[in-house]
Length: 283
Image 1 (cartoon, rainbow, N blue to C red):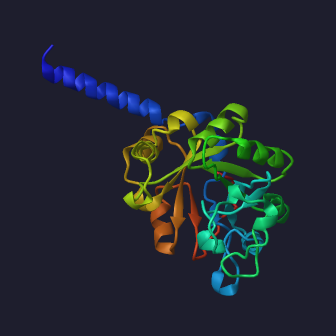
Image 2: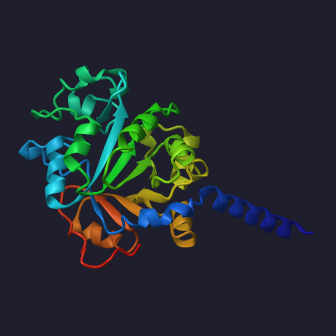
Image 3: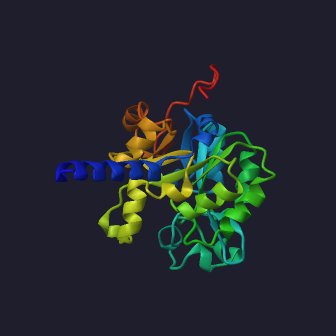
């Protein structure tokens, strides 16, 4: 066997291995497609000039009143409470150093959000406001491999009457749901990352290429639509027909461009058209 054929066989083997690594779990595809056409308000329908901070109760109330789905972020506090907050640190929104995980809820609820009169809500308070009126896209903020957050979230959601999906950048959070609650639609969040983030190179490659799907085996993919020209996403979309959600869409022009490539969008800073509910879902 000449060297050229050996090289071709090796390359073909590597491609097949890559396809196996990134492939999604198609068993949850239909459940994810139920959410097709939804527009999810990124951290609620927030408007800082009007005093409505991101991931605040008024932002979520506004999204419900306007008929938009909601994307939100959940952390676990030091004393085991589920709070809705996006960032890994408190600096940008609360103006102090530290993390949600390092503080109690009593400490956190005293901190104003982005200089407003609003404070960090509990996930339970958000669920009471939404009350099943619009779908939820719940991002799990898991800083490591301890999945206590996942257990607490599922304990709370077990009595919730509304529709929701789970997503995370951390494949270990999705692995926990894959093992313990495979019936819950779960999505792998990803992007191409800037070198300025200082991520571990192996973590960066695994996330960007969606090789981390080997752990999470997601039902859908949520990818940064500005950086989505990657082979792993193309394979998930074109070969396995995985539902794909675009984040974060910030204009009507981008929303139109995403409409042909994505099943749903996560948006902010504009009001996209609401889906036509006069026809039955494609799912």
